[in-house]
Image (cartoon, rainbow, N blue to C red; front, side):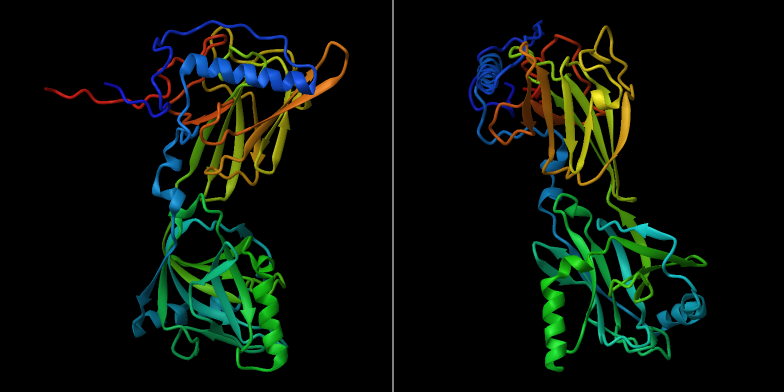
Amino acid sequence: MKKSILFGMTLLFASAAFVSCSKDAGFETPSQIELTKNEYKANFIKRYGEIDPNQTWDFTDLTKSPMTRGTATILPLELYNGFKTSVDNDKKVIEQQTDYTTGLSTFNPYFSADLYAAFSHAKSGEKYNYYHLGIYQNGQVTEIPAQINVKSGRWYDRGNQGSLNQNSGRRVNTKSMTGDNIKFVAYPTRPTNGTQDDKDWNTYVANNMDLYVVENYKVVTVGERTYWCFDCNNDKDYSDLIFQVVSYESAPPVWKRYMIEDLGGTKDFDFNDIVVDVYQDYATSRQKAIIRAMGGTFDFTLKIGDTTWSKSGNGFDATTMYNTLPTPEWDKNLAEFPVTGWNPVSNNVSVTVENLSSTGVLTEVDIPFPKAGEVPMIIAVYPLLVDWMLEYKSIPTDFFYEITVPTEE
């Protein structure tokens, strides 16, 4: 017997046949909007059954995997005297880098790597005594190395003559935290037993850690060795704290397809009014979205993270359906645009649908990604595993079932 992951009650309609349905006239007033929403919800439950209050509408593995409850792994790595040779051999190249302000890269906080503090550098006149690198989450900092000493005008290093007070490496793994919105911070402090001015400074830094979030860093290569260079005091010089990096691996990319109903019909469950694929590449910290289909006849503004995109605002006719009739092109790229701020676990995706009423008044409906147990107008699936439905063909009633393997008796 099949077990449904969708519903806590027996389906009222067990047939998996497609149902043809037509677009409604839409909505004209705020009260009509609520009536339309309620009608949609009632028809959804009538067709598919009551919804388990714990049911979520993200059918990718991301929300079910350990990635949603990730923890950072920071393990000490022993250092032997022989390791000093690499720093000694690279010292001149590192110290003589004339410009640490250009050629910057966007920092990716989700990775696994072995980090060995190699250099610290305080420009002349700086009072800071220690530089730090840490993981910042929920207002708390977890330090990666212990505080690393610096001194005005001095280069410290991990070589034979360098006096860098760091005698071990760190194995850092944050790959499982891609949904936890972590950040790295690089920041300066003064001695905790110093003057009142020093104590006030440390309090200021602790209370303003958002100012020290690592957004950019510089990557320096010497032969086959790689160094990461951080700015710890916001002076745009990335020679403050430098790590030798070994065994780097980025978190794998995440790719989701959002299939959206625009409330143009209360019996229409084809979920192809808006189909958008969103992609996160953790190696480059870049996000992008691709519009695949637009089966609705209303104008809309899509919001993904911090980015908005509208149908009419990008040259598409609001009343025209795209790539749903007669047969869609499943790899069609109707539009592609960069995205920022998308969280693939919280699914911070929504759409505002616009409809010009018969009286000429523009009304809007906001459709967020549904909470657990709600009737959905947006669902998330894997693009490589799930295509959108043909126009006027509702998703079948077994669409949300887990596939079970037959057992031999």
